Image (tube, rainbow, N blue to C red; front, top):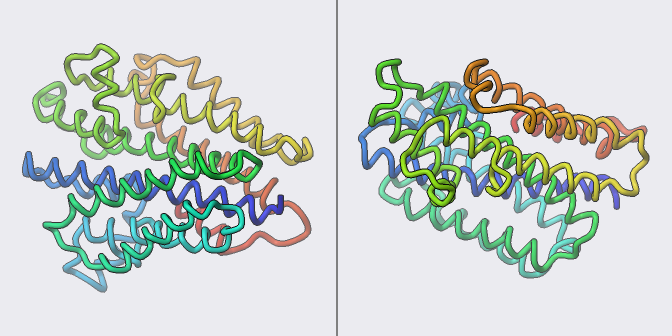
Length: 325
């Protein structure tokens, strides 16, 4: 497979997963705001690493809100609308690699966003649910109508790397950005926030089915980091990334696949060797920040050694997209 095609499939997986994640988190934050009156949209801006872009955008549009910037702003490369539009651009160039059903659903998502291109605060809940439904349909169709070949493995690599990164950011936003005062830890608002974390990761029902009757921060973090039966946990995503990367690079020279393969294997081993008590004692934020840095190293190694290998210079547009991811 051409490296450019593989790279585009990888990024298509990342962008679709990111779109679904943003829609889900935005819906949860909107519901939390309606229930508690607490304005926590700024945590989502931090989760998507777009704080600097938001403050820059405020200079030109002082009336811009956190939620509008996150969902609709084309000045925000990490907004839901920007991300979904980039996914459609990639899909258009990949039509011969996609099934007709997948392409039609991606194009329908694009047309939906073209019509719903203005932020309406009373429309946020319905809008986010519809985006979730459409992106989940695309991901399901891709898994069931596209050939299980090298291209599919690259798509899954991108999807699972993005999911691992977003799960770490969801936990970190609660612990580091929204952490209450010491005397509030374990209190009603603290439990409310951790319940929002579960909903943001689509993990509330799974948490209950694992035998937890009360929302506890350490128990939530343990499940979202270590669970091998929950498909959005860090451990599950990193192990899935390792499996799909090995399948995607079966025909690649050892020297080209080795660096990313080593990074993924070491991250898998390190996560499996730790306990939540140790992580909390050493610093949950520091652990999650380290995971995010290592995922960036994996992404950079894949781009450098697989997608951009050869005499050509790296594509500056793609490198800029990596910096924003």
